[in-house]
Amino acid sequence: MKFDLHTHHERCGHAIGTIRDYIEAALEKGLSVIGISDHAPYFAHELDHPYPGIAMSRKTLETYIAEVLSLREEYRGRIDVLLGIESDFFPESAEIYRNHLQRYPFDYVIGSVHHTNGVSIFKKQRWENLSYEQIVSEKETYYSLIRESAKSGLFQIIGHADAMKRYYPELSDIPTPKVEEAIRVIGECGLAMEVNTSGKASDCRSWYPSDDILEMALHYGVDITFGSDAHHPDRVGDEWEQVSRKLKEIGFKEWVYFKQRKRVPVPL
Image 1 (cartoon, one colour):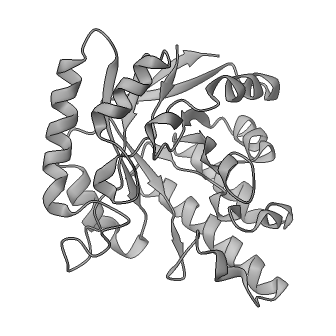
Image 2: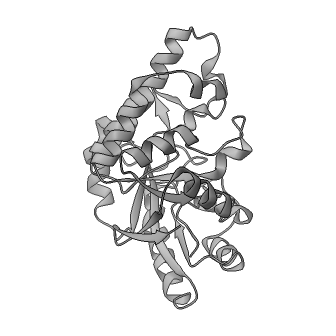
């Protein structure tokens, strides 16, 4: 049974295609479950749509939800369409996000750390002219935020753990106990962690997270799910079979998806 819980569409401003396009792509690729999980608005910002090229606006959130729910009914019996959303984690605004996210019937919420110290983890230039100690500090801040996001109770899934390596692949080789600490807390809090295949197209040329983190996840009893992080319909379900094989090699027996915020196990 194939599923993909991490897909975007044109509302976020940096993806191509409609929600229907992603559902149709999922059908073509033999998926049984497709989750739509576009970028949540910046709920704590004073402006309705401060970053049009990054996330949807607050005023379009309800139309997004209505469209997914309508398409769920239209495609019922052909594919299970799930209502998800990918939310940033800003600890200082956690309660504001909680108040918004709990209003809607999301099947799941993906929690992703996209910023540390006010800078995007995907800003290529952020690593320029940093000392080794500063790089270690940035990595530790990132994993501390992932740990806090797991403890927040806002999410069912931790999104693209270790994506900070995107434009600095060497980051994976820099040791810090903060990584294992974050994975342990994810397990203690009963969250899932996605294998996100979008990293194969970046400088690091690998999935998020790396195999050593997946081995930690197995050790700490962390559930695993799958997300292509597709920003184009062609990438729906991308490398699903390869991820399945790798998880079996590591020792996982199942992975999960979420419906009505409850885990649904799927044998590997």
